Image (cartoon, rainbow, N blue to C red; front, side, top):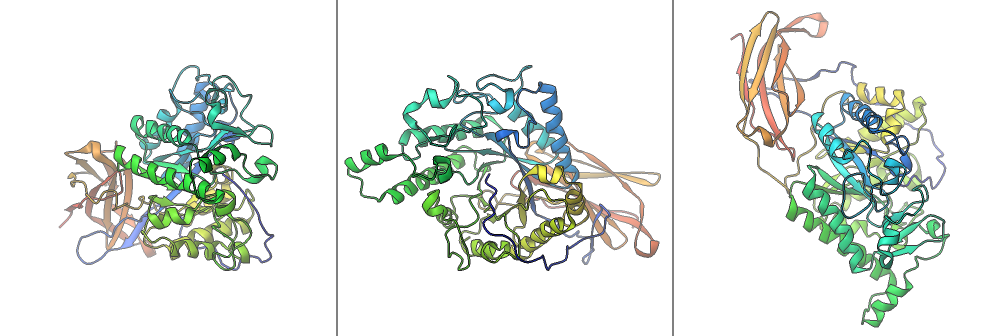
Amino acid sequence: MRITTLLPAFALLLLAACRAPKSVATTAAAPAGDVPPPAEREFRAAWVATVANINWPSKPGLPTDSQQHEAIALLDFLKAHHFNAVIFQVRPQADALYQSALEPWSYYLTGMQGKAPAPYYDPLRFWVDEAHKRGLELHVWLNPYRVHHPSGGPVTDSSLVRRKPELVLPLKSPGYYWFDPALPETKKHSTAVVLDIVRRYDIDGVHFDDYFYPYREYNKGEDFPDSASFAAYVAGGGKLARGDWRREAVNSFIANLYHEIKKEKKSVKFGLSPFGIYRPGQPETACCFDQYDILYADAKLWLNKGWIDYFCPQLYWPITRPQQSFPVLLGWWKGENTKSRHLWPGINVGTDTSAKNVTEVMNQVMISRGMLPESKGVIHWSIGQVFNNPNMANALLSGPYKREALVPASPWLDSHNPAPPEVTTVAKGETVTVGWTHPEAGDVFRWIVYMKHGNTWSYRILDAQERALPVAVTTKGANNQELKLSAVSVSAVGRTGNESARKTILLNR
């Protein structure tokens, strides 16, 4: 995940933060009859980076219980602040934060590449289980081509640098090793790594970031050292120019991987978060980096072709910066979303805790909502910038994230709605306990309980293991008037976000 500032900001933010009342209750005016309005939908995610121990674990070699404690703290924070997804880095440098027969245990986990956690546990399985207990989607984040990072400890015999040297190229900046993306065996290996995770873990998504061919500073400004493989391509009759040949290597990998993931588990979403600018001049004001000619990432093509389910360009610049303006770039990418996939930008404005910086993030969330009302959402780089910033966290929870939200549905993956639950109510004193059962509870990811007090509906989104919710018989409305519970309704939500019909019970009629 790259954090880049291309030009200095030269204007203060002009937009005021959009804030909602601090009440956690989610309310809306009741429509005609007793049908509740739909729950809000918005993708609210954060990246959890393991490379260089940026977010988790806090350092290599922590005991298992300390690693798990840190993970639970992050996941509890996301749930408490009404996030609904986590993007968890499981392959930072051709290694694994999970049990793998293909690649070694990560240095960032144990302090020695190839060494398993002790006492043993599988971190990815732990993260998946704990995320799902909290109603959070878990997307695995992998780097497809990076083999070794300077922060990743010594290169050991378990490293792919040693185990597959025919696929690996050393870069001139110390500590960087890269797979040659054009080699068929590179594509085969990276595809196998992804599909192994998809088969064995109950994940919700697979995620790549902006690292394809490396940034040139990793090779001290020089071109990627693939002359031997390109010469072999030409000798075999290849006609593409070198840049086109490189892009085709990445394009074919992305297209095939999307197809292979869907063959294994159609419901697993494939997401990409490329560098936020496609090429200088696209849009007209955009400057000053060309991922097409430097990273050989034709990200626009992938979006145009629909080889992804969600697309998260890293728009890590403020609203008012002319050559990298957040809304201008987002509008350009929206115009390229010809297959109507989810477009959820990555946002980041640093670790500054000032009111100005908090306002910038609130405005970016609200601008994204306004520009992309059909499928709202953003991803925060990174979880630490919210977790370690109480001003930011509180502003999100009291403002745009005040209401709980469902992840937007992906109808091209699955348009089937779950069956509705069976609902009961038991009144006791000042509480009505709403209970429910479901004929296919294993297929349900979340429940929604809607409650009507007076003429106002509210809702709660509950995790899959929940089966009951106590609801107050009366609440206080505007002007402190008493509002009486008159209806409850419950629905089931499947893994891809589809909601069942609502089962409604009228009370006190």
